[in-house]
Amino acid sequence: MTYLEAIRRTLDSALEDDDRVLLIGEDVGSGGGAFRATEGLQEKYGIDRVRDTPISESAFTGVAIGLALAGWRPIVEYQFADFLTCGFTQIVNVAAKMHFRTRQHVPMVIRAPAGGGFSGGPFHSQNPEAWFLRTPGLKVVCPATVEDVGLLLAAAVRDPNPVVFLEQKNLYTRIKGSYAASSDDSVEGARLARAGTDLTVVTYGAALPTVLEAAKAVRAEVDVEVIDLRVLCPLDWDTVAASVTRTSRCVVVTEDYAEYGVGAEVSARVAEQLFEELDAPVRRLGSGFWPIPFSPPLEAATLPGVDQIASLLLSTARF
Image: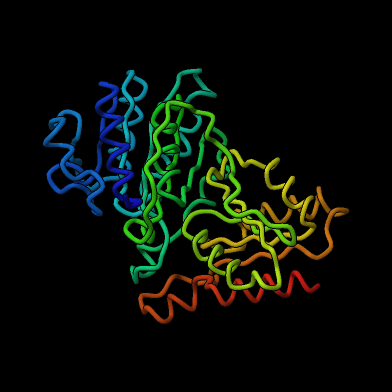
């Protein structure tokens, strides 16, 4: 099934398995969501469990926090991840800190379609993960495969505290895979997406398919290992460190900006903690540091592409 179908199936299963699960957000009911991720669910479970909200992200996120404190397990859909800024105070100042302040759990999932690649322009194409990674109390998840959508979204719904679940809308219908559902919450952490011996690439989300294509393009000269982070906070540093220790070279590739985000954090940790293991400087690559353009050619030039990644892999391997 597709990435999008995996989201819908996981939401369906969550609603069926637990009467405390609710879906709320703009057009999630009769409209089926901005990308049809919730299509058919209101008809199946009723308006009380799949509820449309007014266009006020701050309001419906606050309502979800109240529902979570009252014993429900709300899943909140934002139409685009860019609009998380409208609910920012509720997410980082209320939901994230509630357990620390009161020891009460806030079991809620905030789903948000993130990233570019579909000519959505600067207000519908951002990768907002860095806004939330430095907020204690939040988990941040960014799956890149159909299998991980099923595993990680199901685990997020069961989590006793808030999870920001960043869906990759450029992957919604572009990738397919086998659906995987599990009641095992030990799926957190990074995974080995491709085994290799010469160089480690650390990546996640929509950048993963591009990285794998670049690794295939350079395989005659460089045997690339690819680590898919999957969960950005808490970061699975042990998996990254073990891989870099084996290969002695590290490149970090993200669709987000390389500056001030996951790319910066992973690069800094590798340089600080694994310096003696390295045979080359740590390299990082992300989108150009400017708003994402509407123009398809300009957007393609902004996002990291196969040729750009392949060139960086070769130069790092030859260092």
